Image (cartoon, rainbow, N blue to C red; front, side, top):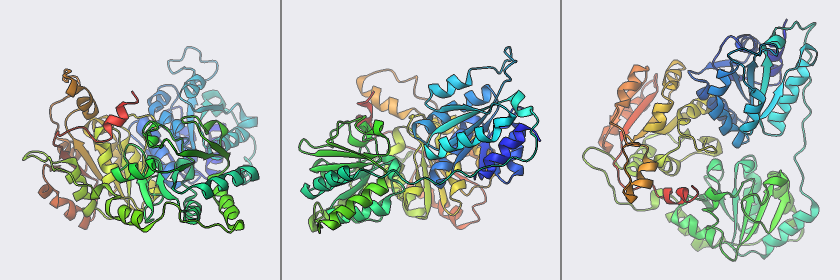
Amino acid sequence: MNVAEVVGRTVAALGADHVFGVVGSGNFHVTNALVAAGARFVAARHEGGAATMADAYARTSGRLGVLSVHQGCGLTNALTGITEAAKSRTPLLVLAAETASAAIRSNFRIDQDALATAVGARAERVHGAATAVDDVVRAFRLATECRRTVVLNLPLDVQAAEFDGEPHVPQPPALNPVAPSAAAVRELADRLVAAQRPVFIAGRGARHAGPELRALAEDCGALLATSAVARGLFHDDPWSLDVSGGFATPLTAELISGADLIVGWGTALNMWTTRHGNLIGPGSALVQVDVESEAIGAHRPVDLGVLGDVAATAEAARAELTDRGTRLAGYRDPGVRERIASAGSWRDVAFADESTPDAIDPRALTIALDALLPEERVLAVDSGNFMGYPSMFLRVPDEQGFCFTQAFQSIGLGLATAIGAALARPDRLPVAALGDGGALMGIAELETAARLGLPMVIVVYNDHAYGAEVHHFGPDGHRLDTVEFPDTDLAAAARGFGCTGLTVRSEADLAPVRDWLNGPRATPLLIDAKIAPGEGAWWLVEAFRGH
């Protein structure tokens, strides 16, 4: 066999069960080797879509994401998706063909190491037949244990080299989680005991630690919130405030601002999660728990930093409180619980319906869809002015029910995100929420969704514009002809790709959605919702303060 086959076999032996990509001559053999070894290959229509599918698959499944691309242009096409994954610390392995070292005049030749490094990924390489297995295992461990996006370059001459014998793939040892120091645990416990109104904010790094955080919060009386990417972690808890930051309800913002102690668990506490620091009250102490020292205090000054795995730290802090015989009411009084029950959701916040005879208010649309769609769903949201409506008005069953590829703030990733998440959770209804700009950017992947037969609902919030820019610049009198477009019949376009297409201008137009849900769901359903212009989304003012 050759090295390309060894690489494919090794990646599959390490546990990769899905590989996403677009096959060209450079990655043909390694992709086929993966498939022969038992992995499922998902062919996208664009490498950018494939990268985001692999990213979403990893986030939703908790498994390694694998992407396969051709040398040069295959990698550059995938770059936005790779950047999103790198910024999100997604464990993603990119199998990138590379021109042979001697092919210095190849049209495909670029500095792929520099490209990967420039966007925050790690660049690795298979150096030759003698090191091929070790090179792959090294890249695999970087991706999975360090939660990194790794571009593994596969030079064509190395891929073609002969490999003697059968590859022996060592299984990397399981690693224990990083334990916090005893001193840090004691100081954290001291602060929890002293606090009268503690709030926990859990982020991406806490998605594995829901039970431990709930138990500790119960013992110290903390209210529970998440960053946007961890939405759903505390979905059924009566003390949950849902999302902290720009998407927060008025009640959530009030209660977090009233905290005298905020503990960030595996979250960056960046401008989105803290509303540029405005959710941190003047008398509130700030604690941050993370497995990486450079993450602590990177966005906000903290009063205490705890280096440790979130679950391990929460368990240790709870044990410390138990040893002290301490159990506190904290922020958890009956009045607060009643307020959360009655006003803790955006569905509970009254609004003036701005629907017109020709277009529907996005809030009315989303609330109606939430009532129609089954609760067992996985929601993927693209970027744009519309994004707060599905993110907050559509419920999710848990943290695996929400996939939010927004670290790079690129539009056009939403549909591919939904496809990757759908393959990770085939037991749930996949729901993609897109703006018309993002839908048109990623429209090629409608064919992928239809070809795969995914029973997916795709909701396009169609204001025939880049709405964020319209609402940001329009009030100041700027010309908007660069960001406004003629209306587009996206339902007809969807039918051309083999999907079911539906145009919606009012709640009554949603009736066929129920028929689709009750039927065989043989094709994806795209809802082209004509959105009433109204005002900018409530989160937009906060968002643009960071620009």
